[in-house]
Image (cartoon, rainbow, N blue to C red; front, top):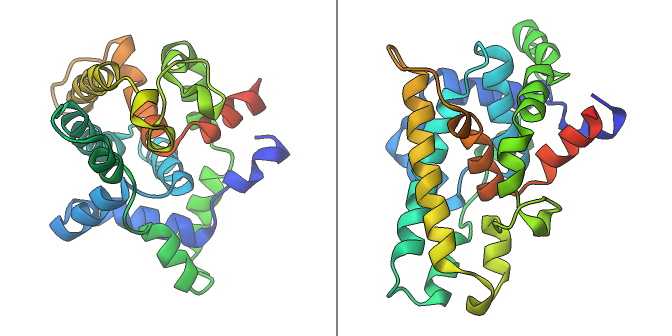
Length: 228
């Protein structure tokens, strides 16, 4: 990865928390799940690093990422689809109200000398598999990337939806997109479980679209730009 993307390289402490988050299954705990819903997941940096950790260290399968963000995308689709909900109320629901677990851990963590986590950090450092996934599926996800983030699509991400007034957002179009994305995420999840059929092309990029819509598109756009 180019020098301009070194800020995406994870620290040992970040890898330790993200690994624990996934490997221990704590991401599925009810109280953790509620906090993630309130904050719309992790912060943008750690949402993408969590997906990258799965891809780089777990046989290229972003299963936990897809499960978490299907939950969030489904929640957003239902909220947007409730036509009687006034725009100010919907806007507040789409705004994050919480904290990022990984940011909180890193802020209070001491430098970790654990050799196994240093090795995992080094294995992740180049984000090679993640970059290849983003580049290979760019034609699929770029048409849905947020124009306000610098993307080529017409769908505003959650953050930029919240920046607009009610007249600046087509709720019907947004609701239809999120419902379709939710269905594609389910298809991707099934493809990564025992006996699941390989995901078709629209489903392959669904996890990327889910992270992009929820957290913004600047990180994946910079990754593919650096890889060009």
